[in-house]
Amino acid sequence: MHPEIGRKSETDKYIGIPIAVIKRLPRYQRFLSELAAKEVERISSRELAAKMKITASQLRQDLSLFGSFGQQGYGYRVSYLLNEINEILGLDNKTTMVLIGAGHLGRAIANYDNFNKRGFMIEAIFDHDPQVIGSNINNLVVKDIKDLGKYLTAAPAEIGIICTPTAAAQEVADLLVEFGIKGIWNFAPVSLKVPEQVCVEHVHIGESLMILSFQMQQQEEV
Amino acid sequence: MHPEIGRKSETDKYIGIPIAVIKRLPRYQRFLSELAAKEVERISSRELAAKMKITASQLRQDLSLFGSFGQQGYGYRVSYLLNEINEILGLDNKTTMVLIGAGHLGRAIANYDNFNKRGFMIEAIFDHDPQVIGSNINNLVVKDIKDLGKYLTAAPAEIGIICTPTAAAQEVADLLVEFGIKGIWNFAPVSLKVPEQVCVEHVHIGESLMILSFQMQQQEEV
DNA sequence: TAGATTGTTAATCGATTAACAATC
DNA sequence: TAGATTGTTAATCGATTAACAATC
Image (tube, rainbow over all chains, first blue to last red; front, side, top):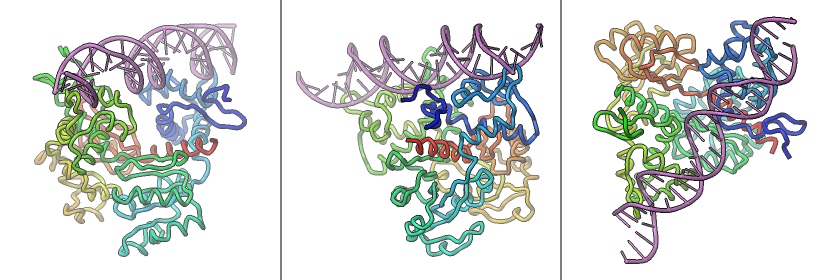
């Protein structure tokens, strides 16, 4: 079926990429963006790895799962490698999103311009609260959650962003799935149940604070 | 020195806990909190693992690094295990925090009440913008970033939350470190340079969206 | 060409899972 | 007691690192 694990082929893209590698891709993207912004033309795996505090082996091993982007004796051309990674991550085309939950966090996300820059566009915002419906957030009028299905039927979106309270998150997820969403970006601290073809990414804000707390305790003892 | 890796002793707490285990602790905390809220009294590793979609082996292995919290033939008492995990994570005592950057994200964090519940208290908010200084966020008056050092000298805080634009993040981190902060909770997409005794936790909001994007692309091909 | 650096294979290391004796 | 389930050891699996032939 798939003779070359982790390699491009005519019909499919990247298969069997280890999750550990996937999680590192955005970090490669970030460091390469910074280098490109500084107009650095080339970089070797040794130099880039040193900047990123990883091993050159890991960097080359990771990249090799997607293709051969470097040149012996030269290293990697920054702009070329960045383009390749952008393409791997799907940042080379527009992705449409709807946001559910116009509380503080939802509004922060709606106002965060970094996503637009990478082609992620919030097309509509929904909320439950009559006080919030109709208000304006970053040039979008907040719609009634009751109209989510109708809206998605007319204008399908790829990603649903859940910024509701925890109690409402699963219900919203079910709605999003019903109306054909392909991925859910979940900010509520709950494990959503969705069909396996729907992708879910959970942003662990509270968990991150607990990890910090644990590590600070460990540090105290040193 | 440390005869029992990953075990409590009189003088030190938990040493040599694998990072993979640390990252799972908040998730244990969450599931146990949910069970406790439902007033479930006992649970076996098999049942809890099934809920969490991990193996019972992993659950028992992980817990065993911190102590023996269960009982053969019975399982774990939910309230007891939750208490132990809260203590391991340092949620059993108050942690003071200051927040820098009162933009959309900073305001969302300042208004997020889940942290207070777990003993994490934002004591002060700072910003650079004269338009924002003096305004009120969740019962705190935004202070001038110029006064951060003075403030921390008078009222030391344990954690600094960085919600500034990327360009300001390192500068703010340096200030926080200079004035004795023990941990930094960083929402800016930049790798901060800090002395090794200072803990840093980075919340990867943008990276999470890229990972979702990658996985959705992979899903398309199936 | 000679030096540098890649892509890849093999070796090492760490994390996960399976199995089971201990024991409630 | 007998059945259930832990804590832990050993086996497996996967991820990282080292090494080097290929080659620009």
